[in-house]
Structure formats: C-alpha cells, structure tokens
Image (tube, rainbow, N blue to C red; front, side, top):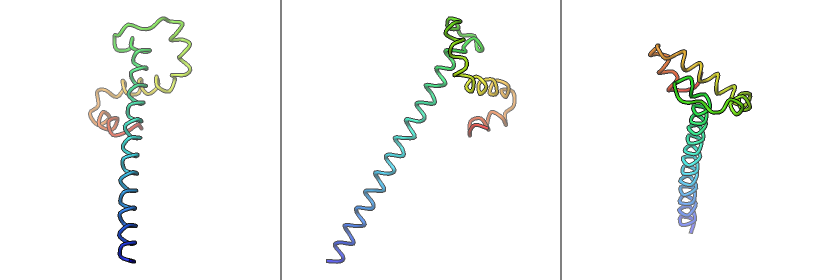
Length: 95
C-alpha cells in the first residue's frame, strides 16, 4: 500500500513539474511577443531614423513622453552598430 501511495505521489510531482514547465514556456513566449510588438510600435513611431515614413507629428509628440525609454534604447543601439562586440552584447541582453 505504501508503495502505491509513493508511486502516486511521484507521478503527481512529475505531472506538476510538467505543468510548471509548460506555463513557464508559455509565459516566456508571451513576453517575447510583447517585446517584439513594442519594438514594432517604436519603429512605426520613430521610423524616420531608418528612412520609414513618420506618423503625423501631433501623434508622435503626444506619445513621445511615453516612449522616452524606448527612444533612448533605440539611440543606444544605433550608436553601437559599428562595434561587433557591442552587437553581440546587445543580442545577449540589455545593458
């Protein structure tokens, strides 16, 4: 009887671990999608830095205070483009 109870507990812990891992994977995927959507939104607003048409000026000025951190990040990345080591560091994570 103890053997069966122990087996049920081990299987329960295993299934709980699988559920935790799948939730982590789903959360990581959603976080990645949100980050990519924010990058796309920033590119739409400040696309004139890379030659894309810019949105209407009142809209860009209204959103500028909200997007200040993203603009700083974009400027930092654009200033690091010539250095291979800095490009590798930007791929690995934000400074």
